[in-house]
Image (cartoon, rainbow, N blue to C red; front, side, top):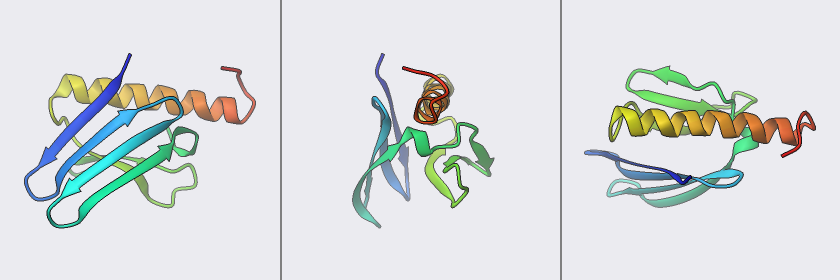
Length: 104
């Protein structure tokens, strides 16, 4: 199953997030900041996100700041929750596999 989330913000532009095998591909298009593309490895993510005001953040496991930031419930609650749950599950699986706790 493909997990993809497209979020639009009036000021910050559009961010497109796609859950792939062992990483999240993030594409950001913004008039203020230009275009950016990032690949974030799931094994680096803490699978428990933090809610701060109107955003949900996935931090790294060493707490150096958010690696992925999502606008709460955009584009809708169901798609948002499905994407967040998929990232949480896959991040835990990838770290467990990396640490030798399970084999995928």
